[in-house]
Length: 259
Image 1 (spheres, rainbow, N blue to C red):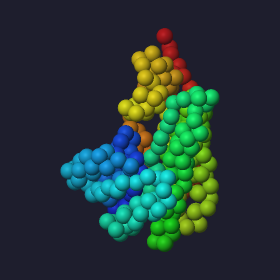
Image 2 (image 1 turned 135 degrees about the vertical axis):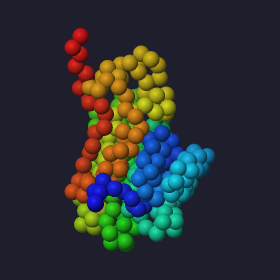
Image 3 (image 1 turned 180 degrees about the horizontal axis):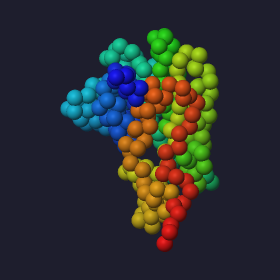
Image 4 (image 1 turned 60 degrees about the horizontal axis):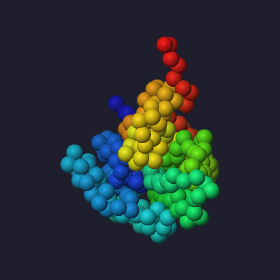
């Protein structure tokens, strides 16, 4: 029986695929039969993920990439095509942030975060779209924004602003590339329990408890709870969804307490 939720055989690139949420995204696609290329700036992060996926029976390659460089983004797509023959899915999961009050933030700090989060998403998406258009068979691009891109983020202005830009870019690219059968969607995660996020956003038990109380579900999200929606958006089950922003934040209204 045909399974519209299947991603078997869909060649997938995952940027930021060597850490945190990116590892889970790569694993979930590979476990479902998708050939995966993981990319990031640090080969030492990528190698164990690649080896683990291969050890579990999945197909995985890796490439070192700085998403701020247009030529490197084009080379990343070419690498996926070299190994797997085509490209069907791009997950723009890379990201950077700086925790600093705006009054103390350097111009270089602002530029670095915006160039990676927003500029890199544009460059990687453009490279992927060119390949998908050349293939003539459509494709799916999934951008990772953040709830900070919806609500803003005190002391993390370049992160929040760039992630808001990712949402707008998603809608713009969906409108532009829909004629080619390319669907472009966005996921905006809330508090997901990763090591990097913990250091930046909830560095002590008091803050951590406050975050938990702020969620309707009363807990942090798990990395696979971001990966699963990525799989859905890449599948035929989402074939009439484009330009959408899916908020994955455990419910932004504080949890109702009977006691």
